[in-house]
Length: 163
Image (cartoon, rainbow, N blue to C red; front, side, top):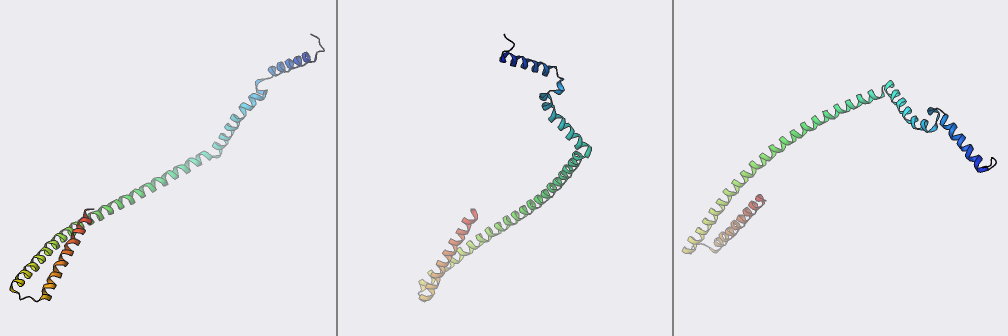
């Protein structure tokens, strides 16, 4: 090869540059500097944070927030327990009143049956004697139909209660 060959000169120059790069100390090489720079900066930032008390302040703040949250949880649990107790008390009151209503409906149904029976007996007895005026018979018939309507309403209330 000739010494004047531009390709050979460039290759020789390249080899010289690579050898010079290899002879430099590792800490002077850009690739190592670029790799170590973020680590060094992170260590410096952490050191400054510890020295200034930033992390201890954040820890204290988090502990205070934890205590606040725990206090709120206790408060909410107390409120929940009070509401649960009140709900149970209201449920028991509702059950008691429902039982009273059921008993009253049963007694009302018995009384309605007695009224119906009595009006039927009065109509039969009076019609046998032919002494009852027609307006009284009409009134008793109307009363019988009212009693039937009342009995139907009682049955409807019983159906609503069962739902």
